[in-house]
Length: 378
View 1 (cartoon, rainbow, N blue to C red):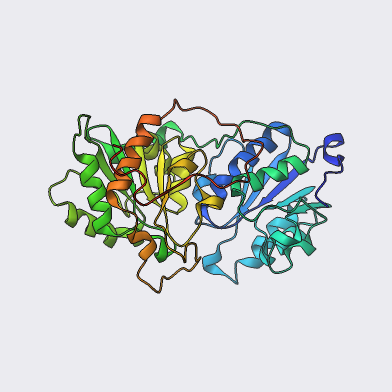
View 2 (view 1 turned 60 degrees about the vertical axis):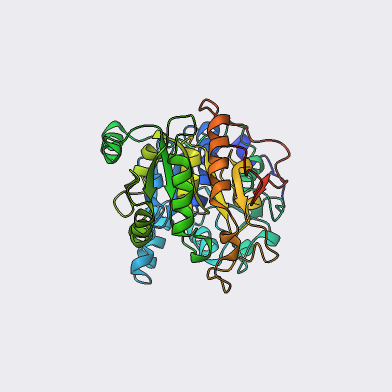
């Protein structure tokens, strides 16, 4: 269908369900749409169907009224109670941002009379058959955040600044910042892990970039803070061994997802591979230099930081393979010296934190720094 029929402008929905279950980065990039819905329909009850791994991003969010959590760890036993909560929600509008069979089924079970989803060309597993209408087909390499904003256009919602609303209450912020106690500023966020092994940068390369950035070079040296989940503890230990006596703080496995909102807010800059925390950093206003191997920045670059993406030029990029059969050669071709130079450039360019407005023509590819592009420009 692609075009809105103005039904929502005349009669705003009372109860809205957003369906986006999984990836942390996707949930972060959908928050500006949540804000747009909240501003456009201030009296609506807005619920979000989500899985536990992304749940912390949405907890206590000021724009959201209800979380409906599908505990995938207890599936299939948890699915029926989850669908029961969806059905009891009596939603007028379901917005399916997931585009898979499972999300389509959730939308159908909601029995919302208005169910909007992606066009058939952008869905998998016949997802489009569960929606009553679809947004216009989206270019394959359009930024995910912009694709989600297309739902706001189809729903005739007024345009709003791109904001994420990620602010911690004072008690949570204080607890998160305690992890940084005693560290000299400025801080450098170093993201280590990713859900795909093919995206991960090498410990020796991470350490080499850190050593470059902790040298003074005529400016205050950066203090590195290693960031990752429990599964990244071995990677953090390897980086610390490589660093030897460098005064880094290893927080891998110690912080929760919500802690990162406050921690990135304290960092002068950050770098790391394609992953969920990369998007949290951008949403928190921290300049993030992102390193790309098996996936493409043209579609998934962190908002406002597309010009700080880096990849090693190799014919098979992007392959979208979780496991690399050739030893992550694409990541190996990203030189640590270039990473350090790009981080310094990001810090020089850093603007005052504020809101960004989505450009009208956003379908093009972001500027991508190839290995060697920033060498010597520190």
